[in-house]
Image (cartoon, rainbow, N blue to C red; front, top):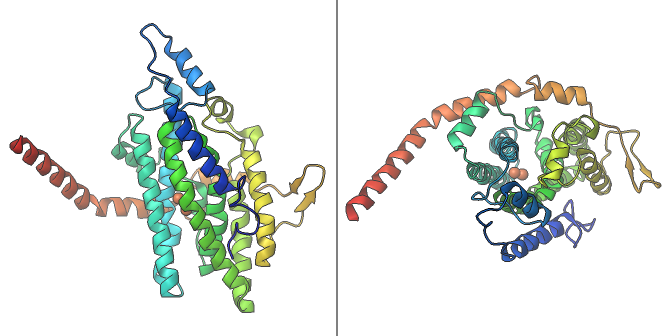
Length: 351
Ligand SMILES: [Fe+2]
Ligand SMILES: [Fe+2]
């Protein structure tokens, strides 16, 4: 039993269907060779034409400086989130209830490290180095997703993170598979396929608990109660307060508004919670026939702002852990750099 098996999410039009379609569109766009812009072409006009034609902007292409900066900020924040996001679940690797659960969770957390690497590599194509990006995170000058500043108190939280947090990440990221910047779009296709596995593993953990003993079911319900609103907050502030949205939409970096994506997520989760036999902690959640969507209570955006600005339950702990891990990994980076330098000098001697 998986989170998206019964709701047609794998069918064309479902989330994975959308990823497949985006991948096909990406291939088709690559085959429509526009050729390089001629000598006296207006580069800004050429950039606008490429965006209009749903072609991809590639690292070698001219792009407005603000487009480059926006992408660096967004991709870096995404990469940092993948890496910091390993911590709340890493907390449970040694305490997973069975060897099978441990192996699955270990694979999932390793995937998140891989996502961080694809994304740092995508950001590097925009002319910034991974070292600079890591420094910006460690100095607190770039952010990561506020969801990872909440603690994982029980094993059921690992299930709730997979179902809700990875689930919200997929809803956010599927449209990014059609992002106008080629390296980011390609990274997102691979990431989304893996996120789908993450969402399923979390859902399956909760399904097992929700159909176990009364104490296990209560643990699953408690995890849903704590993670529901922080997950809704993952879609960012409401459209009325969202600062970067309009320009990102025009550049086809962003395809749907925060509120549209949040609604999609809620509509997806309601049926999934019913199959789990768990109750979404929102007394005002109900189907609205006119809108053909669920009405729901918005998350506490003041809390979101407090967590974003550093005052969440685990902000300090997460950053301290990352700084310590970075310092303890210094010898690995030095050894890798020394090895690479040795390889280059060997090649020079051979040539
Ligand atoms: Fe991820
Ligand atoms: Fe994930």
